[in-house]
Length: 239
Image 1 (cartoon, one colour):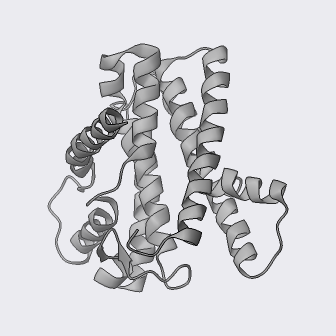
Image 2 (cartoon, rainbow, N blue to C red):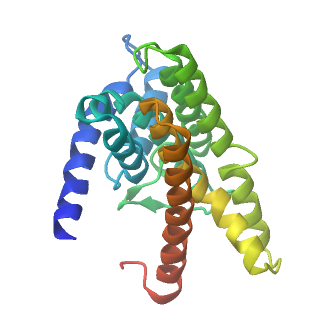
């Protein structure tokens, strides 16, 4: 387990360095426009285990080798932009109203509420700019499939739909076990599924590989949320 944790930490550190390069406009900006990119970087950089890009990259490595895994960086980064956008919006006053994330002021605190909304919007849409670029994959059909799967996992039938179910539950709606599983499958599991499924797509995996890996992704997504809920119930904020 120590070896795995060190491997994950090394991956996250390397990913962070490369991720930063995608979070610049590419042309000189000043004033409000540069402030937007600064807010995007604030919400996307500075920590995190980078589990979703890790899963995507390691799926590619398993199916197609080290070189393909290195080439999958842009796809992994695009998916992480979606995850980071969701955190920026979750922290907003209208949602969880969180002042801190990873020990730093959240985007709406460091900038303002409107910039929190806009930085999240920009991270989400920048994901698809990255995915659609030829630099992400030479095959347009692969790029199209990546866009489709990540968009679906992030939208009304995925993460956003799960957040709506979660908000309803927090307001007192009783959930059955099946309803709770559906909530977790969408809110947390959808992007984990997208990570693994996109890895199969990027690597050109066959149907048997896809079925096995997506079954794994659904299980790990559910277990991830179960553990998170247990920590919320049993631990203090520092833990």
